[in-house]
Image 1 (tube, chains in turn purple, yellow):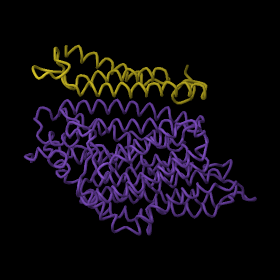
Image 2: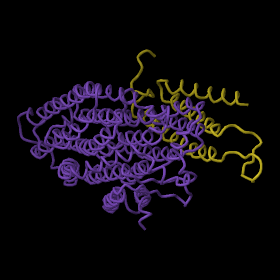
Image 3: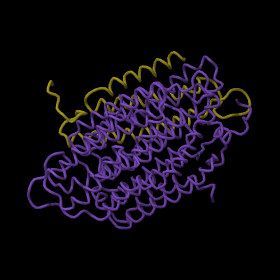
Image 4: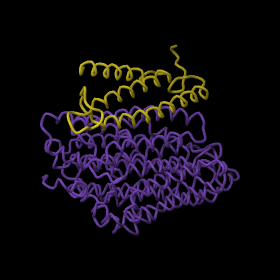
Length: 505
Length: 110
């Protein structure tokens, strides 16, 4: 049984999604909600068990159909993928519970699509095969296209035209890159590819470089790296709240893919090709940080503001990848857990504030006082402090670890930019908060009471990161540190997957 | 044959890219379709071009690499689904926005 645990995070949402399509369940029935919530909550213990399994440092893999690597498709579980699964599960529980507060009734098949999106995400985190990564990317993208349109409306359609066209073009690039790498190395299994790149004949180096950098473009598009991020603010700003919250992990899929592919395949053993992405990622990350900070200051709408905060976090995380040292990777993983959960929570919170304010919505302008302003303001305060990276909450710790990991001339660039981006976030968020909660018109507070599931979902997400990362800061940072060590030494993973080729360097 | 193959893939890519950069949704959809054709052709060539190879490994002689064929099949299916989706999306956008510009705004110059 335990060896099949690895595939459960993929199969469970798939089955639930199919069951949820069954028409007799009724379009809006409570049964659908129950199935969807139970499935999502079940992912929590499963991924927690996988984290426990991975935390020993062993790499385990699941060969589909018992076709052994490098020939068959494998799912690989190491510390990094287990961690990503757990973060996804925590985030998904918050947003699916929130959706049960009424957002799922605005269109059809919300829960089914939500489950398939989870399946794509979990699959992308688990797969050990480059082409399979493409397939899972497509699964999660196709579900995200439909989820983005959930509820309809002009703004959503316009934003999704850009999003869909860009991502289809990105998928073409992914296929070309996978084709080039297969042509040059003759394998698609990532561990096997790492081996073959280490022994690559010199005349193929150009080909592999081209393929690898094309992959960086694709992952950069997913992660919203600088020249490729323009789709993000509008898409995330107009997406339905629970979907936007789940999308908080989508940029991290790009980050994960960059970490996985380049740390494994272009490690120190790759000879001349080692760390070929580093200069690109480092400088583009810093530029992303600058542009995102400006966006944060310029945003005139709370949801756009949160979308730009996601970009700030992407810049920060990419800077961690750009430094490439185990300390930096450990710090970025710590920061990743925090930022994913908090920005997800802020998207939910922004939507709740928008409903309470009636006509003013999420625009940063004077509106009517809110009937439930007190609770919302408290949550906004906690979320803002966490996301801006102020002590005593988890964001500060993550940023401090990252700043500490910078060495030499990297400090000169990273310290001012990261600290200024925090300042920009702080200024923008305090301005937003005071406009929305204090500078309201006189008059009686308005707004219908918000549904209880929405409160549960948003409190879950806003509280999860501080609780998880403050109370368990020691174990979590030990875990991220071990993860970074494991990533820096990919031999163990390669050895597990391809035991016969032990003679390799 | 390599030259012919490369030229046709390149032409398809160039046309697809040009059309994808157009301002209206219909050319964009056609462009994306051409791009995916080009990608499929490209994937076929990634196992190196061989002729007169056996389709199934028969133990003797050279055989065709089966992996690119499997990948192309997957890519075709996914590409087809994506194209269907983007066509519907373009029609939805046309009816909601009242025009077929990708930005949803009428171009003043036309």
